Amino acid sequence: MLGLDVGEKTVGVAISDPEGLTAQPLRTLLRRPDAAELDQLRALVEEYGVKEVVVGLPTRTDGTAGVEARRVRAFAQRLQTACGVVVHFVDERFSTVQAERMLLEAGLSRRRRRQAINHVVAAILLDTFLARRRVKGDG
Image 1 (cartoon, one colour):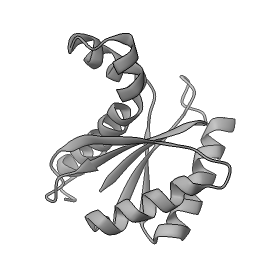
Image 2 (tube, one colour):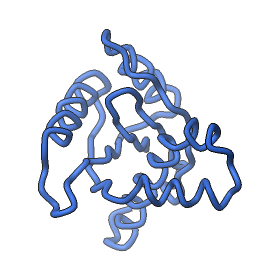
Image 3 (cartoon, one colour):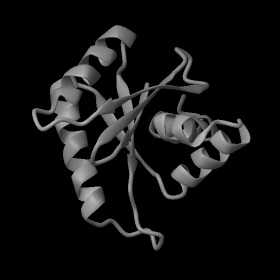
Image 4 (cartoon, one colour):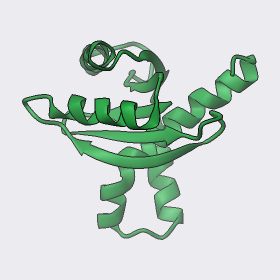
């Protein structure tokens, strides 16, 4: 599975192990006006044999969806069409704060944290989904 943190400028990407037990940060892709990031994601889907993608859904602190959530849902629809994958959504509230805390504890400089934050968030989102799936007994 892939995990994605879809932002306006970047897409953080994480990958699960083949058994779907853990998630690892993979890379951050730059968003482009020509949607070239979809081609890069399609290549990753093919390279890793991905069947499902977890996308972080930005929700407000009260749990409601706003403009950002609609933008991410539209991106996910394009991804699903382009790559033929099943897309799942996971609430991404507080995931950036969690990733920032992890990177600070690891002693990364501000520059290194900025470079890694998106794909670390993607790993947190994917890991959250995988853990919930295990608890439900679906995986």
